[in-house]
Length: 189
Image (cartoon, rainbow, N blue to C red):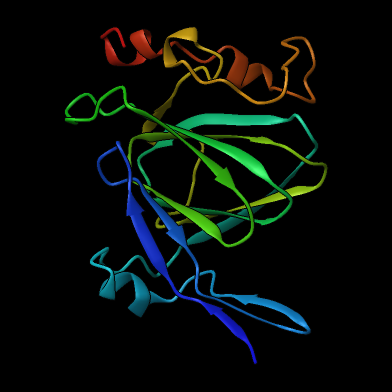
């Protein structure tokens, strides 16, 4: 008899950032996960997200850190293989949750709905971690949005694996040189 884990959602300290457990059906052959079902999102009060206009997948080595990117697009993010430590910071200066930081252990079956203007970053905890981003708009160079340095001490993010600032396999030059939270928002955290 298959084991069924139902679709569920949980709010976070960041307005509009939702942690989602996908519907999952497991039997002797393995597990089927619903990466996206529009009616489940609508029934949960999240509204319709589709159609997605771009879907990206990254494969990241253990210890690699990506982010903290806050484009003016809504993202549905999930790990489909491996494990990651997700970190999110509200960079929207008009938001009641400005400066809030949320971290989530990301494994297959867990998703995060990231609203426009919320910084999204993650660190791969195992080799070959595959992180999928579904975008409600196509990403284009120079699009509206911002980025924040994921190593900014003001964020208080305790990345689980050590990060060598000089190792481009662990952090890109772009992310390392991104502005601090204070520089992005004009406020202290």
